Each structure stands twice: as structure tokens, then as C-alpha cells.
Image (cartoon, rainbow, N blue to C red):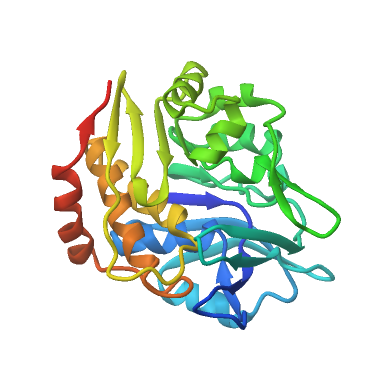
Length: 304
């Protein structure tokens, strides 16, 4: 029995920014950031993913040494790992370009023996079908979703755009929905975040979270909407993976049946550490994360 199983592609990211003009390959993808954030808070984690033959064995060793179970990871010969070029501009905007895409994750890739307190579905390049979502729904009591990979459209050059979700009805199988403000707008067609949240809630989703960068996040649960401020990092170096770290920390607390407001505050605090360094190396220890949570929790307010 695992606490959290993340389903989606690992990635090899090539990140360039004003601080780092020459991009270098970096381990990325939701399985990396969600799992490591949850591990820092004591969760037992595993991954269901596919990579290409170019996925370095050093990445695998590094993850295993940090307590991430990779027994359901498949390396497919003759293929490439999903990879992105991430170009950050001075204004903080990001351009995402798909370079390679690993084979999709199919129903047969899901171990029938898989047991988890929560399964987090996190596609990044349309690699998960609705049939896989149905299969995962039957293996756990809690299904979490980050919809970004269901919304992305890639042109011939790999440039990434958001498009409307073709079949949002499958959200009725989701318990926890977490997205950025742009993504929830793409799912619902609603530009007002509160209206968008209510649309997601109407599908039967019990907990809806919208992250908004340094503006903090919104949480809708049990008929109330909360505004949670962002935890303040010491320095902003690389925002890649911050949303996934938020999710991993949130879920690590949520499975302990803690107050959802507290869980979001922990997500905010954990995310503030990862952006202080490049790649998946800036994770705060549990004590450090909790120290940043206190200020965030005190400033949380009820909107409706």
C-alpha cells in the first residue's frame, strides 16, 4: 500500500532563463516533483510512467535513493523520453516547446495489484486516456487530477497552447482537482475563477484548488472558498515544478485527514522552497516547511 501514486510522464527539461541562458538537461515531470515533495513530508510514494531509452540510469538511481518506488516505470526501447524546452522571460512568462514525447500510458501499464491511498493523475503531453482514468478510479478511494496534459495542444514546431477539454464529464470520477488559473479557464470557459471553481464542483469534485503564482491560491471545499496567500521564497530562481510540489505536499498532509486549508498552506510553503534552486533539488525539510506554513495559515481568509 502506497500513500501516493503519481501517474504521468517523467520529463527531461531544458530550462533557459535570464539567470541560466545555456539550457542543460534536468530531470522533470510531475512524477519527480510530486513524489519528492511528498517524500519530504514522510509519504510512501510510487510512480506509473513510461520513458524512452535515453532516460539516464543516473536519474533512476537518484530517485530510488530518495525513496521513490519505480517498480511500475517502463523504459521503452527505440523511443525518446518526453522532453520540453522551457524558456523563461524577464517578466516571468514561460514558453513551453515539446521536443520529444514518450509512448502513451495505457490500461495494460497499470499494475492490477496497485494499492494507494490516493492516485494523482498528472499528464503533461496527452499521454493518459480516459480509459486509464476509469481503471485508476477503481483502484483507490481518492483520485486527484492536474489537467494540464489534457489541455495542451502542440503545433508543428512543438510550441504549446491550451485548448478546451473535449470531455470534461470525466471529472465526475475525480475527488481533488488542482490547476492553474489559466487551466481552469480552459476547462470551463469561465474567466472568473470563482465561477470556474463552481463549474468544476458541479461535476462532483469534492475539493477544487486553483494556484495563481505569487497571488496565492484558492481552495473550494464543503461549500466554502478560501484565499490562501503564497509563501514567500528567499529568492526566485526557477519556478519549474512548483505546482507539482504544491500538489505533493498537499496530498501528503491530506491523506492524514488534516484540515484541507492547512494542507493547502503546506503546499504553498513547500512550493516556495523548490523555486529557490534550479530543478528538483530545492526541497525544504519538514520542519522548515512547517515554519513557513504558520505565516501563510494566519493570513488565510474565507471569500464565500
